Length: 247
Length: 310
Image (cartoon, rainbow over all chains, first blue to last red; front, side):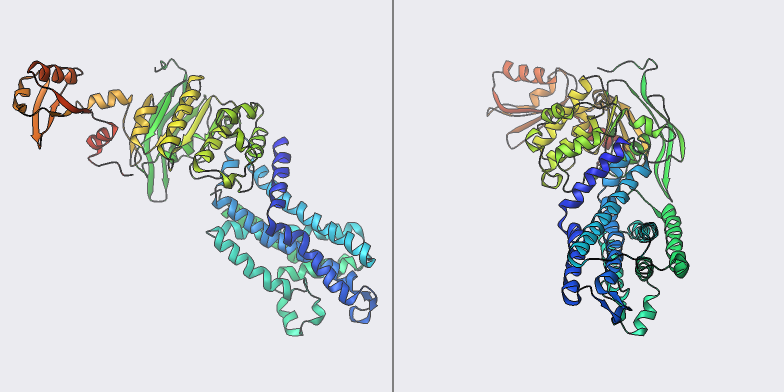
């Protein structure tokens, strides 16, 4: 256990030293919040069925954070660490393989959660954020969403041959998803055709699930999202078990 | 120099086999390594050295054969075995932004028993670099850090793979001194190298590998002696010296002369002394005298019919 905590703590420090990952995890969601918050405020509006703009956008930004963490951070860290032999060097110690990999996943989860905590704190203080759901439900949905998208990023890092291609593919998947899923901008402004296409994107289901539960929907209205994300996780874990390589 | 193998073998390898698809990397390799020796796996790139050490380290699963380190099976008992061995991997790096002290502190935490890493990095000349991120270290400093990481658990056995590749001669000699220090502290060292001079000067015993097979195994001195190769004495004599006269000198087999320079071929440990005495006895003097002896490169050439490729 000592090795796991030490490795996790060291990797947290390394994550925070990397300007790129720190910006996208900690700063970028806040920038979006202040940008849209300053334009629309958080007064109830008929555009969002009587909800405040910030109240609706916050769970969307949470989804955006999960997407960045899973598809960008996870993919790039894992692919680079594998390609450069960092994972292999860690593997050549008495650490269990699941500790070596678990620490990396844990760090990305903790950083994502830190980004979300900052986002919620800022929205609460600046815009009087309202929460209409059940805390445990939202937490459960958050963890499920992380499992689904993180495992997808992990698979990309495992199956793509080089860190460079992994990075390119992760970006190519993430950026359209970020705009089409309703994570970076409300899906209400997207045309209906785009919204239909977006149903095929995993991040759309994260947005739907988090947004619904945040605003007080029961789980029963989001069984599709739960099934898609749980299925994605199971498939990705199965593929990882087959394809993961230390080098 | 070499400890007797009185059942105290640190490593026993019997008939090790490993293929990658159709490519046979290691083809029936057997050897033992005794406590306290520096043992070298030597051969060109692709000879199967790295695959062999990765099987020793438990990082690769052999297709066949038996491997025991410190009496344990590195595959089924890998984690507990890695508590007691120190590993340096070929072409493995650390995280770019990890500082030297953080790397030492981190790897020390992975072992139940670890030494204080501060004197260790001081001994390796890295104490000024404790706050330096890995990516900012020079090649030699990185290699020294890898050695420090391999020693942080006070291992009984250290396995290093191509430790000095890419280093300049000065850094290479510093690493050699370090490996000898490790051996002198009673630890066993296994290293791989494709650099024959390194094997000859550093190893107590070498196993020469080629295409996954063991070609020869002995001390470097014995391997070179077994060639029974001629030594050469090269010098420039005073004008008027008749090189042919040297053919009657003891130990000399033949003499070549060109553009004032004489090359004497012969056998025996006294060859140089005899040649020098002979010239002086004839009333001549000489300059630029040097001797050329067979090396492990010649052993490899003689055994495989090929030059070792860099």
